[in-house]
Length: 107
View 1 (cartoon, rainbow, N blue to C red):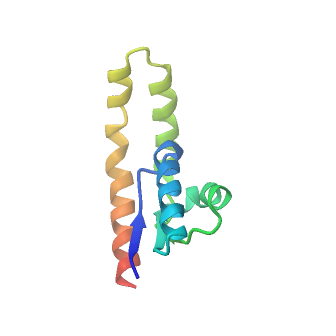
View 2: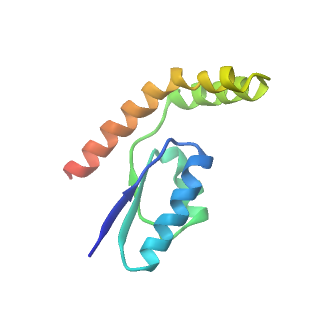
C-alpha cells in the first residue's frame, strides 16, 4: 500500500489542485488524506467527499488576519506589494499546521 498526506496553505486556490491529485491517487489504490485546518473541511467535503481529513485545528484569530490581508492585497494595484502582505500571516498559519501535523502523526 502506498500512502500520501496532502497539505497546503489554507487558501482554496492552494487546496483545490491537491484535492484533484489526492482523489486521483486514491482512485489508483493509494491511501491518502488531506491535512487541513478545520476551517476548510466543509469545502473539501463538498469538492471531494471521499477523501479522509486530518484535522489540524482551527485557524482562530489567524483566519480574520488572513481575510484582512486578502482584502488589502486584492485592493493593492501593486502585485508585489500586495503579495508581500501575506508574509505577516504565514507564521501563524505554519505554526498551527506544523503543530497539528505533529500531533496527528504522533497518534
